[in-house]
Structure formats: structure tokens, C-alpha cells
Length: 429
Ligand code: PLP
Image (cartoon, rainbow, N blue to C red; front, side):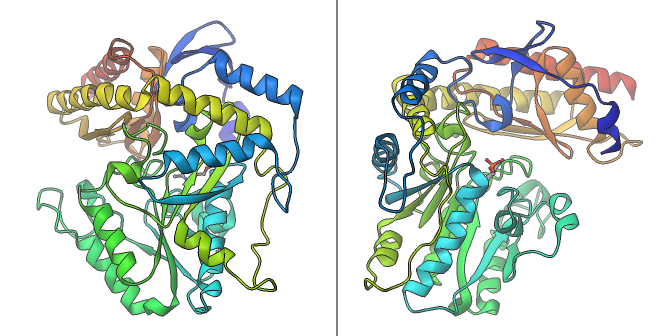
């Protein structure tokens, strides 16, 4: 906090495509799409126009409690259509990812109460998970540095190990994955007593934790486990949906059907704040098929289903579909993953454990002997910025999440800037 007093602000003034421009007119390739979200790229007139037209027609009207606005209904329908393979039947809107997660957590407790099993209240998250800043979301999250100053948390929340192959809690990185973290999750559920566990929440790829890419069968295995023990499976897709992994959703990438899904970020590509929680037919039917005087989902934000945000989302989804940005993410991401691998092989003392799915990538920066954790990664990021490329770090990991419109030619600037930064770091040793 002290450092903030003196740190110069990096103020971005305009943006177009994959580039942002600071107040001095300097251009940067935004290799992080802001905060993992400008999927359709900056300056999309179609989205801005849809927002302007909607604002003029109806800037706001509530969309719950027996009232609605048309864009929120249209967007809900469109999402249910897109999410057919995941088996989603209904959508609840909020303002951002944290609120989408809160909604899912509260719904999971309501679901079991509606089913006559009020003891099923416990929630399980994972180490290294990021689910947002509000108390429920933070309670199921697992990044220690974000948590400790805010304890105590929401009660009845537990954490399972992450499927972090290169830093496995059970084996060294070379032993090979035995899915020991799945076995541990099963032991946790058994120990807690499945009759008391409401839900398990997982990002298909743990983004803010350091783009932790699970082994191929992990998601299917934990999904099966949850079904076996009657624990609701919530897929937090705030980063992984809308083309990011080369598919509409991360759940689709891994071939699973969750009970609930949370969305934000790429839903509007950041043109307006919007969160969404989608639920399966079973969840929807269970909470709605109550007696007229039965439990009610007393939950909603003033701006739930904001018409301008929903209009932005509809226009954004149209771009993602019409331009097949998922296919571009897959195609360019395959190339980017290969390039990251080449770099880690060329500079093993500076970079290791590369990975990329769609356009969600990572590479770990090996700290120098005198470096504190994360220090060298920050230096590499700073050097890349000086070369006009913006990336983020999560401790020692450099994370990449460019707009899904990025071409290989544009992506080459990311790889070149990273290579030069690594060369400089090696020269300084
Ligand atoms: N869930 C995941 C997986 C996220 O990455 C984030 C934000 O980065 C959130 C939830 C919280 O979203 P928001 O910052 O919009 O509240």
C-alpha cells in the first residue's frame, strides 16, 4: 500500500483490436485482454452501437420479481441455447463474477433445502482457486495471500488440493499423475459425510492461481465423484468461457456437464459489467417446483439483467460466433503453446512448465538466487512492457490471455518480447 503512493500510474487512453494506447500515445499489445476478458477485442463498433441503441430505448428496468426487460430475456434464451451441450436450463444475472459465484453458492444451499436435505450445507473449493472478492466467493477461494487478512470466513467451507501437476502436493513433477488429488477429494467428502456436503466449485483451468491446467481426465473424474456422492458441481467459467479455451466453455473442452456454471468477463468482453449463473434443469425444477408457500430464492441485485449490459452481451456473443473466435483461439493458441515450449527448452534456467489451452497460457519464471518469490517474474513482465507487451504474473508464473482475435503475427511480438526479456535475465546472472 505504501508503494502505491509513489508508483506512477499507467493510464490507458484508447484501444483498438489487441492494442491499448497510453496517454502519451504509446502502443502496447494487451496480451492479457485487460483482466482475461476482452475476448472480442477493443473498439468493436457493433457492441458499442448495440449499447447506445439500448440505452436510448430503455436504459434500465429491473429484471426480477415478476418484472423484466427484453434484452435480459433474449440473452438468457441465447445462453441456454449456447449451453445446451452442458445441459443448462436457466440463467440468473448479476453484475460480475463474484456475484455470479455468490449466487451459485446460495443456490446450492437452497437446492438441498428444497429437496428436504437441510443438513447439506458444506462447500468445497480448492487450493489456488480464485472466485472473487465477496465473502462467499473468497471463502471458497484458495489463494492464501488474498485470504488471510480477511478471516474469519463463511462457515462450513473446505479446500481440496489443486490438480497442479508441476507442483503436485503428492508427487514430484516427473512421477506422473495418479489423480491422487481426486482420491483426496473423495476422502474429504467421505470424512465430512456426503449428507452434509452441498457443492464443490472448480474453475476448469485455474486462471488467477497461475493458469493451472489439470491433467486430461481430472474434470471428468471429479464430476463423476460429485454425482456419486450427490454433491452439486459448480463450474466457475468466469475466465474459461466464450471461446477462451477454443470452445464455448471449459466444461465443453473437458466434456463434462456441471450442475451450475458461473460467467462474467468474456460474456460482454468487458464492454459492460455483467455476471450470470446458469443452472441445470434439475436445479431449476427443484427450486421452482415448490408449494406456493414454499421456500423462495430471495436474492437479486438492483442491476440484475441490466438491459444495456445484456445488449452488449448479445452483440458480443454474435461476434464470437460469427467470427468463430473459439477456432481462432484454438489455432493461434496451439502455436503459442509450441512457442512457449521452445522458449522453456532454450532457457531452462529462466523459464519452465509452459502450457497453453486455447488462448490461455502460462510459463513459470525460475527465480534467481537472490530473488524473492515472484520477483524475477515481475522483472520479466516489466521488461516485456518496456517492449510494448502487457502480461500479468501470479507469483513466479507469467500468465497470458490475449484477445481471441489475435493473429499469429501479432502473437509473435509477445514471444519476441518474452525471449528478449529472458535473454537479458540470463545475461545478468
Ligand atoms: N471467478 C473467476 C474464475 C475469476 O477469475 C474471477 C475474476 O478474476 C472471478 C470469479 C470474480 O470475478 P469479478 O472480478 O468480476 O468479480
